[in-house]
Image (cartoon, rainbow, N blue to C red; front, side, top):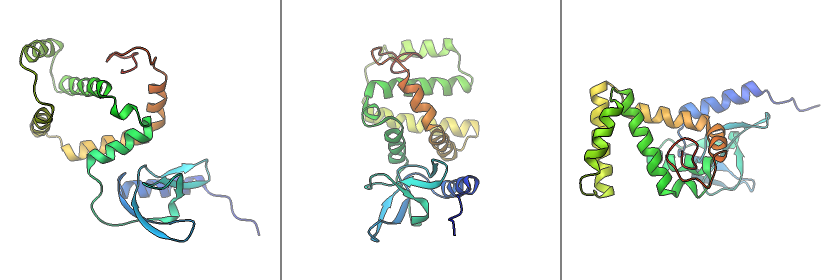
Length: 201
């Protein structure tokens, strides 16, 4: 009797259901090839591999594992920062996540886009750049705290759920990891620039 061929639609539905219930970094139990059952955390979203198998990648285990062998443990997931780190490593490898210059450029770009979407103008931004860069350089740790406080306050003013927005964006970039990786790899590596077209664009 022949084994029935996998149904890609059902496999995708299985992955979608897992991803809706579990964020990247969720605690899981997995049955290894040896039969041993271990606890670990996910480091990717579930996906259909080559059209015939629902799989997921796990911390501390090389390669992917069949989703049928992975069972969520209902406890607190990894902190958001670590889950973003998992996405960065899965998308860009080991060097790009720690490129401080690129991370600085990308944060500045996203901050400007948020301000623009909330009504700020290029003239406003230019005045603030001149103001900030004529003041003493701050401490990065304290400035991160300031960013968090003012971002939460901005969300309150605009009726935005900060937690919902950040989780939705992490889900979105996971779903587009291949396109984001390809776009990044297509950029020239010998040009260091925060602008589109540069290695850090």
